Image (cartoon, rainbow, N blue to C red; front, side, top):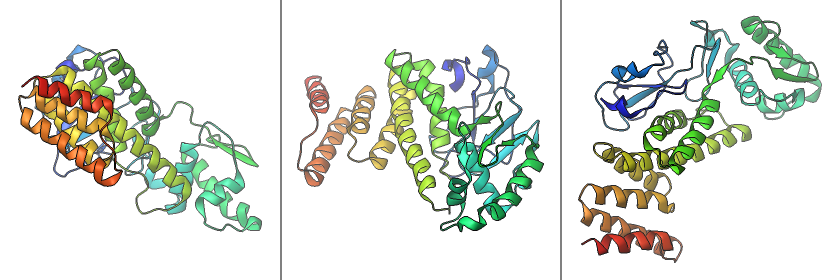
Length: 308
């Protein structure tokens, strides 16, 4: 069972399930009950499928409100879905912006600029107030606090973007301690969230900033997943290979992906493929930047050659 090496010490346990399609995603239209936080959690894990054909469902430990802003917007409160009650496209954008910035007061003109390209200062309140009133009807009168500056007041809410950021810190810390089993689950938590994207079809500077954050998060999660797979070995080496290839595809000038892929191929006994990866990296760097691989990558290559 895949989950046998996952340490169930955090509220964002993962359930992996086979699904059609190429992208892992939160099954936002089919909320699942949280699994019990005990060693028997491993029994919930089905046989492993290929990376990219899994649905990762990130679950919180039963908070009052669960909010997914990456991928399809989904809001669940005490088992009830609330996202359909938001006031249209602008209501969804307003709610998402409030969620992203929920730990600070947001001036009204900033909110207006997030929703409309060229807001009329004289009409800000006229346009914002009806949307805010509808949000308060959905989440309660105290859910949006303030007058000239506003803040979303859902202190116990679980937010997928925040959970992913926290998970990548745990994964990186575990990798630094070479605790591969403890890194594996948080790395996937961050990866599944990052791969869902953010507000598809929308365009605004603040949306681009979140998308950039997700790109950085995704690359870090792939690195952690590859490192954990290498550390665990066995069948997890296939995951390290897939993560290395993903890193190379997403960031062809980022040498870490090549190094992970070289190490994974070597651990699988495919030394020729590992050497070939180094050749591709050398050519890419020479063509794009006119430089050679870094000393760390060259040292890895020399170690591989010395093993022949």
